[in-house]
Image (tube, rainbow, N blue to C red; front, side):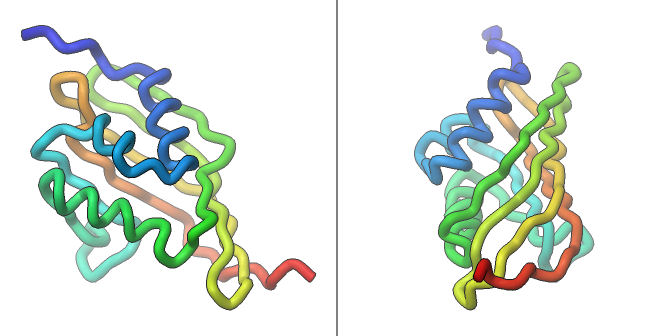
Amino acid sequence: MSHPPVTTATLEAFSAAWNRHDLDALMTFMSDDCVFMTAGGPDACGARHVGHEAVRKAFALGWATLPDAQWRHGVHFVHGDFGVSQWTYTGTAADGSRVETDGVDVFTFKNGKIAVKNVFRKARPNLPPVA
């Protein structure tokens, strides 16, 4: 069975779903056996989440500490079964401090879906609250 390829438009729509905090929409882009590797965690890869349900739970945690999280200024590239999204991650922590840091997602695609989402983000101290 032939599947439509992932394109930059696909990654733009995926990014838009992140910014809407639309978990159901996000999961439609992911393969059933997907893998999500976070920017931080106990392992060399950050933290590794495998399978639709585990990835869904990990994605939801992305908004737990920064409920207004956004991925701004997205630029997306696709080459065959690989892609990259570059963005600036922003949000406000519970103490009012602000996050603003650049990062990328490195993707592997399979059968028209995201099979692997591997996040890399610059380590930067939080900025003071807006006065």
